[in-house]
Image (cartoon, rainbow, N blue to C red; front, side, top):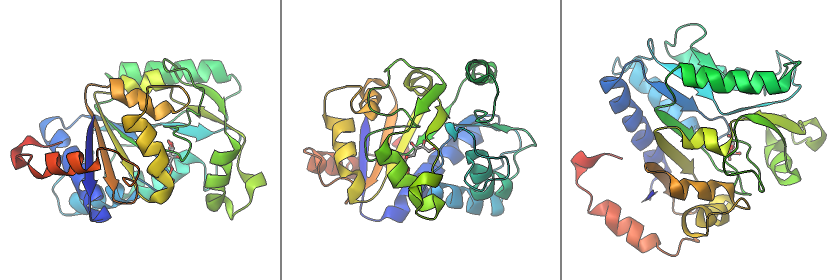
Length: 261
Ligand code: F6R
């Protein structure tokens, strides 16, 4: 796992977007794994800027989102299909239908989850997966206790996650769904490159457990320690609990520019 601590949080967006630009340059039909939430917004804004500047195109790319609330009506603005459309997909040139997500309104949820796994496989797997991290250490909505080998399935959200996400529902905890469909940790681990972004003090404990704790279902993001190509982009506030912060900073400072992330 490469941990990169950046003084300027804006740099996180441009570094991740640069990585996606390189991928699309070498593989225009790349498969991107898209996260929702606030952490990736700077990446999407920077990708839109590069698209508008004519540097990149998503016309041949595919996208798969990580997760979806169960039961939100199709027009609900917090339904993740709508969120990813608003913050990213509709602002660039993805082909119609090129971005897929788990169906939180499916009648047969196990079949919908199996179908989603199959769709990712049929697309050739995810080349680059963007991730955020929850304050309880979840990635996608794999809450503490999730099987480290899990695949797309229904999960119950923890009270902590629902409280964290109430800000998207006018602060109304009761309006936050109790269940979601989420890619599993095994699904996420199959992506070829994982890029996790985290900013702010509230993420510091989860970032510490992810990067420096034992690999445990209690801190689901710690499974990234087993991934051959995981990049963690964080700001100073999210890095404040890291024991090896100075080492990560020195390593990144000394890294040759051509090496990329
Ligand atoms: C959302 C997702 C979640 C978020 C996490 C952090 O698709 O997968 O794991 O990444 O809850 O959310 P933010 O970025 O809003 O702090």
